[in-house]
Length: 185
Image 1: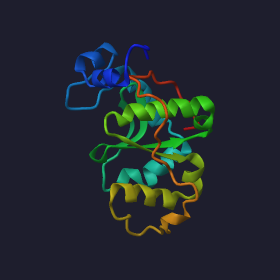
Image 2: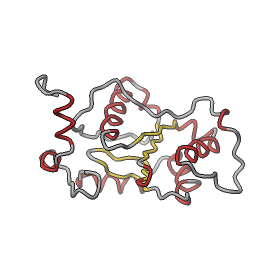
Image 3: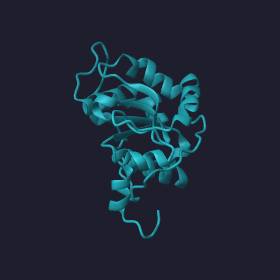
């Protein structure tokens, strides 16, 4: 960020279709801005998800009452799961997300998404593997829907490390170029 620019200047510029286009993003006023150059990578990620992404998708989100999409391109980022009706992103994070660089990158990305009134819900791979029913309950609670019938879902208090709606201490950037991810989620 240029030292002469204020957060207010950048934020007002983020929503300008001209400015978004100058950053290589497509924005037609009806959809969220997106980088069309990321479509092929998103398609690859849909074809080769992590085990935990596959589990969350096929065993819960693909049949959820609310419509979710996988590997959605928003801005210069590829989002694991997105529910447009609720402005909710769900991320399944592997160990590389918990390095200093990973945490900083995720905070910047979260701040970017929040500019479009999108909330980010994060789960670790470990949570998907070990407390899956509680992960599902948490998602249902945020979407304010009843859990799917026939599921043995325990009380949400058993979520020892519940997913957090992350809000980073970083300034909101006008955009950030995505980085490639490893297969860790």
